[in-house]
Length: 197
Length: 270
Image 1 (cartoon, rainbow over the protein chains, first blue to last red):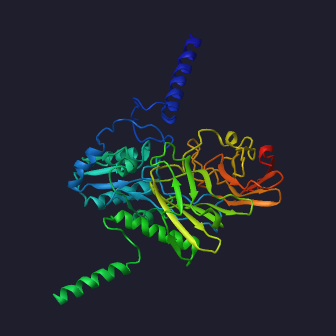
Image 2 (image 1 turned 135 degrees about the vertical axis):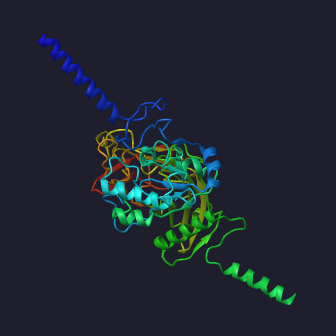
Image 3 (image 1 turned 135 degrees about the horizontal axis):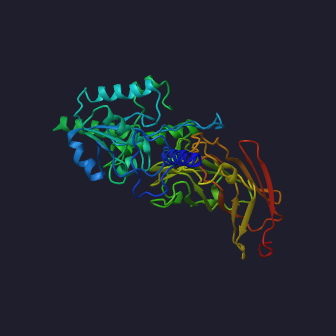
């Protein structure tokens, strides 16, 4: 009896470990990647799900069809960091090209995010949408990047009703359309202290 | 009518005076790319004039690269007898300055090939410095993205195994033709922008910063490298056929690594 109980505990423990490992490990196939319950806290680069509960997943055609409504375009691509050990006398001139009119909030899709940065993100989106929760919003970064999935997830949780996730990101756009150079959004940088965060 | 002509000529002269030359049909994006190049040129060459000549260098690059962290680049120089140095610049890489070759008397600088990392759809520029000190630029658009931050798909320790090992392949170089050489250096050339996906730390930049190839006691070329050169650098270059002695390669990296290897030319070329 005691042994059976022990086994049950071990079994439950095994399940928990299994579940934890599954949540943290990247998917090894692009097919049927499950949606995590909440935000995705695993490695930021990897296969992403085909869905985002509460949001619409769009391809390039879907994005083109949405543009006449002037959606808020939120780019969460991480800013390039000056590498440790990079010589001081070499030019370090990071630049970022994005979908025209996009607002670049580098790192806004990271998870977990400290509460003040999470609040800064939601405050910034509230300002960009003029407080209209039904305003169309598109989140994107690059292919196989969980950041834009997380950013979309945060906005769905915050009550936005027309959140669109564009998983193809800048790469999916630049084959058919011009990109434009964007700078990190100044209010977001001010809230974070550095664009590299 | 006279006023119209005057207005027209004013418009024309204003266009001629525009600081960034923009071709007809150019888009905002083209203008931005031109402005970016102007900024990079100023950073690298200061106030020196850089003449545009699309025929100076033939840049071979895939229109669309299969692997942005390993983009093959071929540079064929039109006037190889009047070349002192060659710069290769990848405009939209955060560190655009990819490579600078300075050729010595034992070089046949007709063709250089190497593999680079490309961060985003970008113009690349080859800039030749002629023996009389003129700079001449040629550009090409390359479609690749994500190359600077792409992880190598193995642990850092594994990537550094055998670091500094070198191999060299020579063509026969018979009949007074230049000897074609391909140098392969084992070195991860960490860009410093590659994130370990598990620890989320960035592997510090560790790259071949200086490499000298000599034939006997004569310099073939000196290379100033950068993080934009792909891991395990492969460099294809030419050596004048009439030199004597072994070919020596001496390389250093930015973290104090130092390696030297000697290679014998195939006897047919001596």
